[in-house]
Image (cartoon, rainbow, N blue to C red):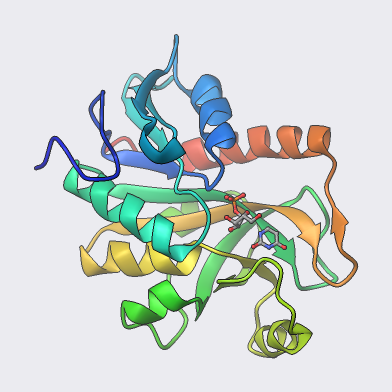
Length: 227
Ligand SMILES: O=P(O)(O)O[C@H]1O[C@H](CO)[C@@H](O)[C@H]1O
Ligand SMILES: O=c1cc[nH]c(=O)[nH]1
């Protein structure tokens, strides 16, 4: 196992179970919520904030930001695995493609369509599945999501195509995370807060997002086994 990697420069051990938000601020908030005492900074290199410590169940937990998009998530996931991570759970935000989803609700990924370049570069041509046990342990409604490269997509027909393929929400890292974990035979899953409604450009308020993130932290931690 490595102790030093190129982009993550760990100051603390990496736990076998890792929560992976895109947003470094969410990494700090989830670490403060879930790690007992003061979370120790694992990494700040390249602005990819990560934290490690002991969680309420008495076992180690790491929360590490991936940054935005598949290429950054792939680097972070590969290096976490080199450093000892074995179970990876993305805790993200997503945009609703389906009118059935509400701002602030949680959604777990039953599959991720590879709409992004990184997961395709890793060989994905079909929907990528999460680890079934980890997925089943997430107490949140499940749906197919699509991982895309563009947040500001100038072509609305792409979203229409993903809707036709069954996607109910869009984000940017899950497919790559599932592809990297699968390459190593490791478990990965994803739960997201619905932060946007794609068709109307409605966006969740900051306070509502904080509350939903906290709920996501509870759901994610409850699903992520210590061993
Ligand atoms: O909130 P996070 O986890 O970063 O996830 C979503 O938010 C970012 C875009 O705003 C992308 O990273 C997307 O996947
Ligand atoms: O609309 C959205 C919201 C969050 N993340 C995305 O990638 N898209």
